[in-house]
Length: 159
Length: 391
Image 1 (cartoon, chains in turn cyan, orange):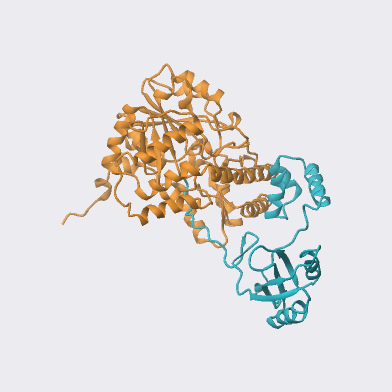
Image 2: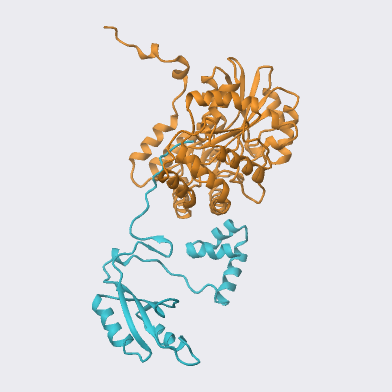
């Protein structure tokens, strides 16, 4: 059944009929399996991978490393829960290593993000230090190449 | 000064070889914009990293000399281990294995080492395009045996018997098959072996697609059947299984008296296979079973997708169980294979190969390769649907 998930992870737009053909299942079985995964919280959503650089929308994103002081009994969860409710935060991970939380934050320009960091994040009680890294160019995201299409170099051989 | 008439100078045998009719066709495709090709016969994967690294390492260490004519001893040993482990075939690395420049060279030198002028070489068709020209160049007579969709394009004992004569020297045995995707299971092999055991006919078993089989059953080599080892040369290589087409590396394994004659042709024509590729191939055989499994599972996804898609469009195809091709019938369109491909290319910019490229019995079929990404295949299917609606 893992194969259904890996297929959807790569391309969530495959129709149930196509998934059924690939997996040797009926369409009804595929639909039921997907519903089960959704209910169990295994399938958390379906999103398009958008290259905003190719559109008119002003879009900047940054990776922010946070050092925070964990709370007794709650550890990092409390601060993480506060941070993940901000709309600007696209992803939020607890990390091993030199810092604690890694965020991906987006806004319409650098100033947006600067304000968010200085006024919303840095002011939180548990936050000890922040380090902001702006993304200059995306090469690959979610396993998909962003910056360039890979050209098929194979010659049209007939063999 | 004498004006040269090249047609008088060049070998008649070579001039008689028909240039590939589809070359022209693909030249057109190459000049068009937004062409989606399902034409190529090589993996879309890159060679697994560990193999590429091994090639680079060998260069860094300056291993840039010729190897022994028959190949690196270490590689030949690995080939024997691999053939035993994956296909239960037993060969001695010392004199029963020969490393070649692709499976293609192994095919060439095996045919050349066996045939005398006038000998007949049996070639089940549709098949890979190289066997007949090489047989002709060697002075042999290529004798096609038609395989049929209703037999899942398998070679049957009956069809084989009909073409056996006292002049038959060699049977080309190309399974899993390009272009049909047909495979021969043990019971089908047994039928063929039963015919051959009482003859002097040798078998060239082209097993280049042996790792690419689907549906849980692994490839069985005809050389594994009782009484067949001594009359078979197994040809295999790294191109398809390990996505190593550009490395040009293959091998032949068979009885020493045959391999030793092949070695003579090889050493005078080629000297040895590329050294860098040979070092890389050692790692392929030793460490890359998982990479093969991954690629096979990806091909299988696409295979199922495309077979289902084509059948829904009314281009019926039997379920291919090997290689990475489907061979759907286009007979319901009323077009010849060549017309179908040409019109599909001009109207929807999709390139597929006419079945006739692989033998005249390929008329009414086209070869579609699924060595492409799923998205690419889905787009091509959409275009084929539009094409069929426009007819």
